[in-house]
Length: 117
Image 1: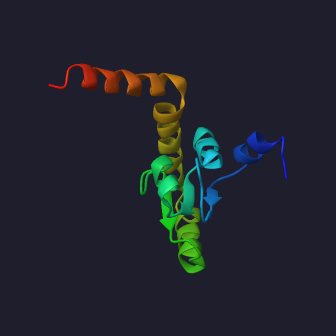
Image 2: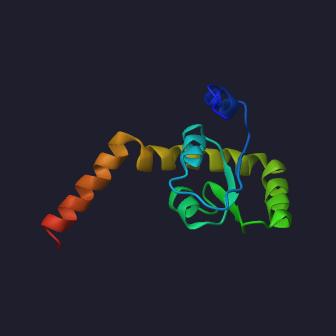
């Protein structure tokens, strides 16, 4: 189902839970980072490329409901953790997914290729 109010839903959230079994590029996870949300997500490769364990995300194995519940309890009960992880989400989004951050990564890569010293 298509939604036009995703930004409002994210703004009203305290935590983003992403229990995917498979993802290509996890766009919803990137949107949650842009909204400054701490993340709990399944431990799959593409989620790990976007979110950073113990920085802005807690992980659980696919189909492991007990660990998911444990991670939810952990973050719900720790407001300082939510705040810190939310800030880290914003930083990750800024550095990896906003145009300026992407440009800086490309410049760094090109400089490394041109003069590999």
